[in-house]
Length: 293
Image: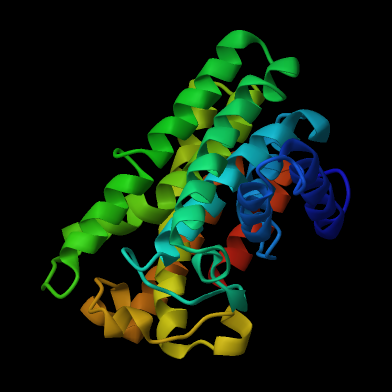
């Protein structure tokens, strides 16, 4: 990866700032709401995954940035909607009031919608100046599948319908693979697609993404039980309060930790064929599992 992690995050933030409408653009309320959540902090894990995967295939940073930003827009939209009273009803996100607590439910809902549409506008616009039309179409299809009912939305629906119910391991895996792992897998697949990866390389990175995506959500489940609210930027214990399907609830904390560790080991094995070129992906994988926020 060209530059340090901090430098890449700064480049992502700069690109997001230029791709999103300015706060004073009419009507300003919606644009302030969009930018409020996009620039609320956060790990920028998903853009980093996109850029690190693309870097394996020597895709220039300036070419990967629009795709990375598009996926971050979709991720942020999902967080805004997750926090709404009709969903998880969370008052805080990343240590400050959730979008709907600042702008109201209607504007928050529309801000999420606006970010989703802005993501596809970014792929159709900024990304199209870097890649041939067939690659842009493939990237659009990839993101649509990861964000739709075959991905993130499908997982969220089953998560909601499972609240307060006894679920089996198969249902729990479905929720986590779709609600969280789908978009994370999309990140590494998108990097590979930009780099014209072979079918075998794409399949290998898909396996990596699914394992790290599931491990990431398991760690989220664990941190909701054991984490520090100040570090997390939100209240802990929410999953238990809503009787959500989680790995600690179904298997216990120790088994959940072991599962995350096994997934990390398997994910790192997936990257062996790429050698030193995948070192940044390995670092991100370790961070996704060994973290406190």
